[in-house]
Amino acid sequence: MLVKISCKNIRKIFIQKGKMQVHVLEGISLDVYENEFVVILGPGQSGKTTLLRIIAGLETPTQGQVLLDGKEVKGPGADRGLVFQSYMLFPWRTVMGNVEVGPKLRGVPKRERRKIAAYYINLVGLAGYEKYYPHQLSGGMKQRVGIARAYANNPEVMLLDEPFGQLDAQTRYYMEKETARIWETEKRTVVFVTNNIEEAIFLGDRIITLEGKLPGRMKSIYKVNLPRPREHTDTAFLELRHKITEETKLLL
Amino acid sequence: MSMEAMAPAVRKAVRERTSISLWRLVGNEYFLYIVSFIGFLLIWDWVAKAQILGRSLAPPSDVLGELRRLMAVELAGKNLLGHIWDSTRRIFIGFAIASAIAVPLGLLMALNRYVNAIVKPVFDIFKPMPPIAWISIAILWFGIEESSKIFIIVIGAFVPCLLNSYNGVRLIEPELYDVIRMLGGNRRNEIIQVCFPAAFPAIFSGLQISLSIAWTCVLAAELVSSRSGLGWIIIQGMRLTKPELVIGGMAIIALVAWLTTLLVSGLEKVICPWKRGIKAV
Image (cartoon, rainbow over all chains, first blue to last red; front, side):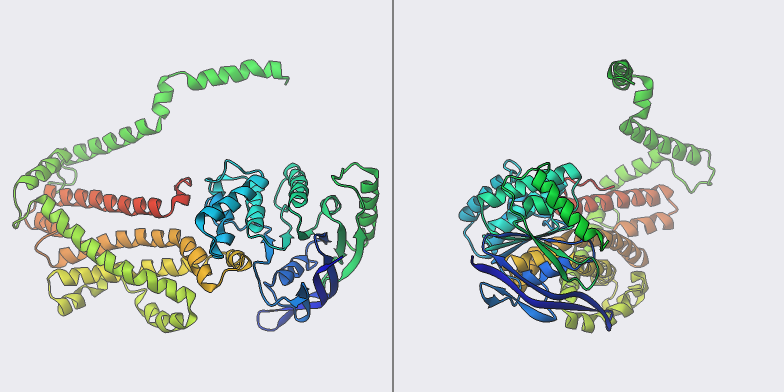
């Protein structure tokens, strides 16, 4: 299998208010394979969002490096798509306007980028809502736009930062199923950050848990060998959930 | 309570809400607007006719009559519309100059810390100074003609325009820039795609504040020295001891200032269509 993303011994220390040091990540080494769905699982304050932002190129590691296709990541770029925890849609743009931003920045002609955007709006199940503004959409719909916007730029890697953290339980469950469906339609290398064990097992090929205190260190790696589409009530699913819960509980 | 037991109660409530009753009419918002307005006119009329404030309060009918007279009769060479236009023109010129300079300057200050470091200290000296304080020096510099009045308006309208466009950019959620960077955009894309549209609502609320300050400024300037305009009409009414002229002038100012405010919010609706669905209080 081809290694797509490679994190090499990453450490991150934030400097706050001039001299206060916050040690967030320590010794993170991790390979993500092409078209693999990797979930980074950890409680709040475990550095998982920071790790994702380092892979995205929005933060620079204090030590260590991230390689994408063997080349060092030096900053953000269109080869990675990021889906934000708090959606970060542009309120002044319609659904169509939000989704077509990526191709627009790359200079794709209007007709073509509209076609691309329409395809992904349809893929995330928002056909008919092209002319709506974000404030007219529910939380789940907003995040669908966020996912479509990242996909429309045709990135090689999708990075999702607790994308369903703000949704209610039912919508969250539904969005997880949708995410699996979309990923199977449009295979990408995915790094998905969450604090929800069930979400991790439902979606991931592999789950990487972080220790629940700063600095965040890698704790264990679980391979999820369940057939898709997965069922939350499946015995193997429940066994794995039990195992991860038991092993992470010690830290909470 | 079971569904069956609840149904009649709900039906009853629905019937009560839809039936036209006196209570419903009294509770109607628009009906209350009219009641409020007519009540205000009646109290005004009564206070004026009972001469509770002496002879210095004219009843609404006199004010209306005076305004109608001013439409036909010329005062200092202009009828009422001429005076309205004189004040409004001053407002628009001053307001246009102020916003054309202050809005881009505020944006630049927010985007570039060197510009900020150079402009901010000087701006902070002038910021707390009430624009009316400039009237005397403006007359000394520009005389009593149009330019001194426009100068006062520019001074007054400048501050909120600049502060709001500056804050509009400073308060943008930084992660919105990350969106553009992740999609492959550069600094220029960030400014055009995020900064400007995100700052528009703040800029427009600055323009609204500037506009009402501009009206205050033009009146003050016209009260001090002028040969035309709505402020001058009020002064004429005072000199001639004609309260109906003073109150008429005040009413017209309120009306015209309100119309110009509508103009700016109309412009905002065109430029910021995403805010159309959000009702302002």
